[in-house]
Length: 387
Image 1 (cartoon, rainbow, N blue to C red):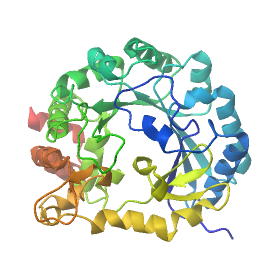
Image 2 (cartoon, helix red, strand yellow):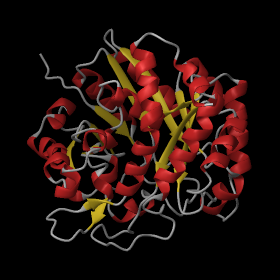
Image 3 (tube, one colour):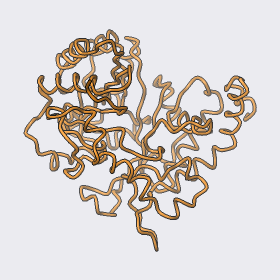
Image 4 (cartoon, rainbow, N blue to C red):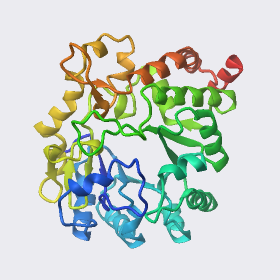
């Protein structure tokens, strides 16, 4: 019997190629790092990926996530073929698909396909038009907000389930309330807010890029969104950062790798089948295999991947280890551990101040929601308590 494992693998079949040029995109510089000659994933690699991923999964439900770059660049026929391969190799397992896109290329044909096959769409949009158009521009320098808003309307028209992914940067960190209201006005009821922290192409650099969110800015943004959400949207609008934190207050591990104790269960595959330890570590030293050459479970359970995952726990600063919030935070994403502290062997997380602010400011309400749930109450009643 083939070895199986519990892991997640995100596919980048279009690699770094995209139809817009976001200034803050961390994946655009992969052109200098991902040296394979394959522009897009071939049908042969696609088939190997689908078969290998399903066969290697210990779960009865197999979650496919398609990202980029921009996956729509491969064309609709590529994903129709992907679904056919999934049906061919499912072997009784339940298959789900999530598709992350900037929305620029979506049309009725795409929307009909997504609806027919129950794809969950992730739409990248930064809420406020002027903020979105600051960094999310087309290759010819034109704004893209209206085109993305149109794509959202198209998905709503075809009743395609979607969520929004919003980057928190130097322009909107102090506009949490306005951003949340704008996303609601667009029809988003499932939101995710992603902090941008980049040091440029050189990973050893501590030169923070100008578009990065300030150290405390991400926390300020989340607190502002949280306070607005509490007014009338508990149980109606779902924010992944709030759901993750509430789950931790209830005693569960975070569903986000950012605040899990270790990493290593979420890998990515590039267009040629190369597998890397993490989406944020697509560098030669973190290449752990190729799905065309070996079973994915073997890669997931390899010593190299295990060591990568354990390093998150074993390279915490002493400051982090002694923090009262460490059990909620677990040091955050290793990508953001870029600060040098006096007397510390390891680097500290740039977003530490943000996490402390977010966890402390929301603690009284989180405690109330936890108790409501534990006693079988309606979580929406917390809005009456907080008003």
